[in-house]
Length: 294
Image (cartoon, rainbow, N blue to C red; front, side, top):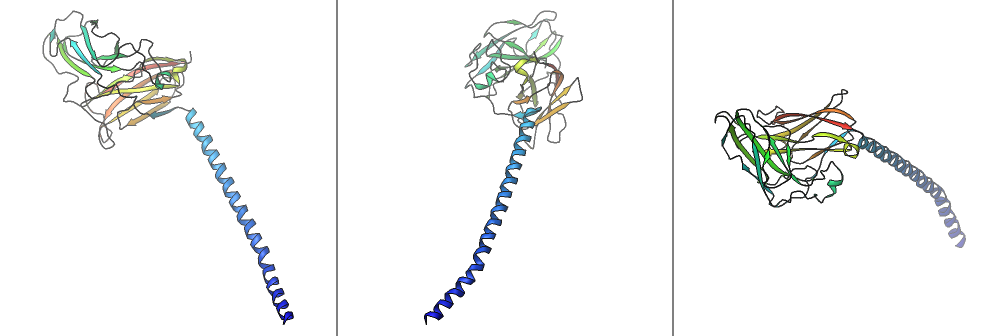
């Protein structure tokens, strides 16, 4: 009886003797395949990371979040009067009243150290007839903006952080329309017409400021959306065939990174849902800027 049992055990042992090496072989093969897959994944991730780094070092435009709100900030244009008729051939003086906004203070956010920043601090952007903005740094002071042609004129004023990002709170801005000479003609900017107002970039950028240049605008009587009105920036080099563009569906600042030194034309447009420019006195604007290493 014990011989039969021994023989049976030997048969079982011989049976499993063939299975065990196969199981080990399968385990080794599966381990090898897993290792290859992990290596391939690692190589792919490394390649993607390298590509991402390369992309981030080239010229690109990103839309970023607004700076923190400044609650209750508001600008009112106190002169000229709304709808007033000023004498022609005389200088026009503009005065502002600012509330809940500290003029001359440095805006305390990380962005202040990342982009061009005024050492004079927070201020108000005043835009007359869609010309480049004038910066007002003193509340209540009357500023001479020179002689204006006879006819209708429009001014928009809004608070600006020290690094020129506009305060986009509801009610922060003020639009004023007036005449020079005689009270007739259509105003460029009203509460009835969808309008986009060019603010930044402006002037010359150099040194560390060229790494990150802000694109910022103001809206009047219009909202942006993915299926409605949009804002489109186009930056065209005057020194090469390079052109960079972004279409925005939210009222946020955008930033162009690593713009090479040179001369550029920046175009801002308000476009409709089909990509067509929207008519309006402020809705298609071009400004020239320069970028230099030093």
